[in-house]
Length: 256
Image (cartoon, rainbow, N blue to C red; front, side, top):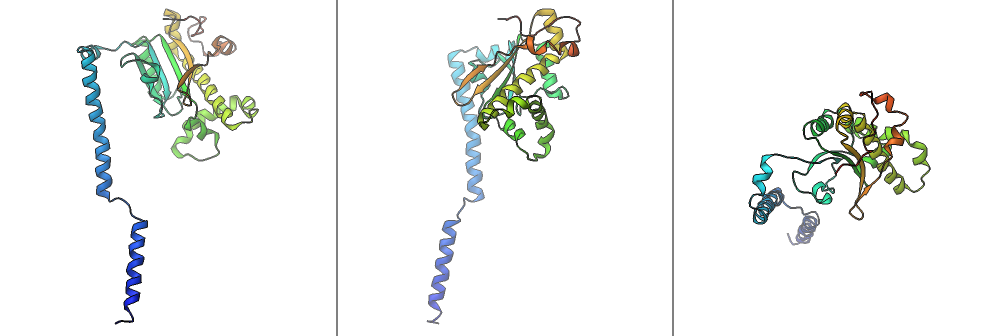
């Protein structure tokens, strides 16, 4: 019995050390923490609503009546891009659609119906396509990897790369190449907006909406207007996509 006792002690020590190294919170602890984090959102919302009512007692009564935004914003789903906050606008002032890499694809009923509603019913005066530097969707499309169900979506970004391959391949710095693809992707999505019949028809009738291409710079928090020359870009292809039998540029006249 005495000879075996040291072995028993050593085994006990090894087990104790192993448990300390690999310790993880119990499932109950994780669930408690997640529940608390989730509930914080509702507490934040309560404080926000009370703050709004303190500043303006009629705020939510007016907000509930209707919306009359001047802007349609089509941007990336990235959680780091807070649309109203970075634009300095309030709820009701901008109509928002977001997806991975801010794409406008004609066969995508989600974005198409958003644009149709914004243009034909809300009668927005500006359509903004806004990308952002350090975009994960742009980076994923540049890599030779299989992304499963994302492949058909990312293929649209790869098409942008194909259209501008010579320019992009000439950029040696990888980060600058990604940044430029972000800008070119915004440009191509703006053209896709201009191709849409509801946008053309509304522009011919009323002189708006005006289409803009922006990039949000996550590194300094600033919005960049790419000031895209649509008159030049559309000069050779306008007759292909024209459905109005009239001349339109869709960013020629500034609207307040």
